[in-house]
Length: 345
Image (cartoon, rainbow, N blue to C red; front, top):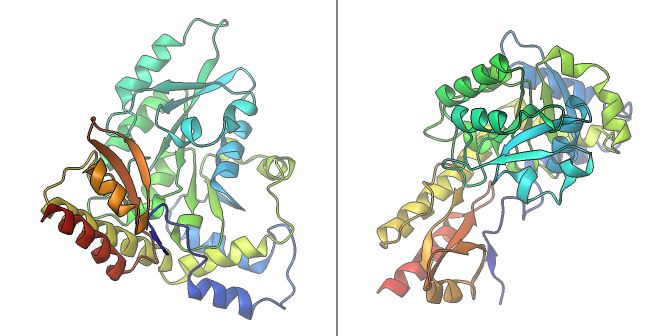
């Protein structure tokens, strides 16, 4: 039996407009290693969202590469990262950051997020110098691992603390499109460029075949960044493939349109599950849902759909994760909801 997948937001290939652009330009010769015309146009389009900030923009193939590059290039060997215990670099990247020689100092998240208090506590607990790794960079993601959002006020408070304490601020933007397109969002790319030292814009989860855009507002972090990209094996000869996709995503707002669609499908599904009487482990703010369902119902849903069982809730129920994408159809959302409603009745 074919099961529809709510496992992630990259089960499909790419949006048709991206495939069309790749096909139409396939035989056009371009300069290699990201110096092609498409990548330059994509950089210009991205910078247009950032006002007076004029950051460097680099394209790499994956989110793990983006995190490895941004963190390892910014830190000296004795410097460490502060991250929420639920952060992607902590639980989903096979120790990639530790493999570069940098300690991750974890703190308990609040609704998936860091707070100034938690960062301050980490600084206090890791200050026995030179016997402890020195905290130097703060890592967070927006949206978070549980789909929640940072408000502008929250990010401003963290950014202010980082500047006061001599810390760099990195924002993992794997699902930044979903965050910026959410109904409750009050941040813009310009805000993030002003508040973060370095961040990246995820394309893989918003309709691209692959690719993330690393954005570097802090001039001190830009120097010789290309060397780090090459040394980590991330400088693609056919960098045009990445640049062209971001050009298409940002040319006429497709990036935000696709993210809004994914969020809309999540809200539709969340509302239907809630109306059936079930609670959620986290508020549905973007395109990730975390309903708490009976284990018996989860077993029945597994016959028709793929999704992650996130964690046990109690002896008879568990939290599951459902992710909607740019390609999710209302018919599949409604089919999932119908199975939930069928179990209730």
